[in-house]
Image: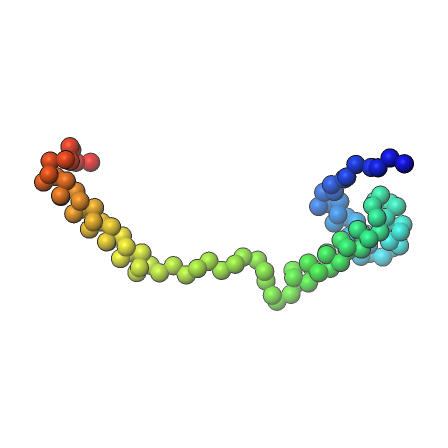
Length: 103
């Protein structure tokens, strides 16, 4: 008996099989035969779908992690510091004759 090549199912196919299992109109073995996959895969996908559905309708949202708060005052202070350093270096290079032309 020859082995079948490993198949990769699309998310749409997995969802379709899981929804059919949730409907309960057919047994897992009938669905496995219909979708040509093992019954354990259908059960796992059904469980994943049910577990994920709780997150959709639950009060706990796992959507986006909160971005760190931006300290605007610290950023403005850093900009001022860098501007001061640039001005100082420009003046020093100008006095030394190493600055060809102003930008």
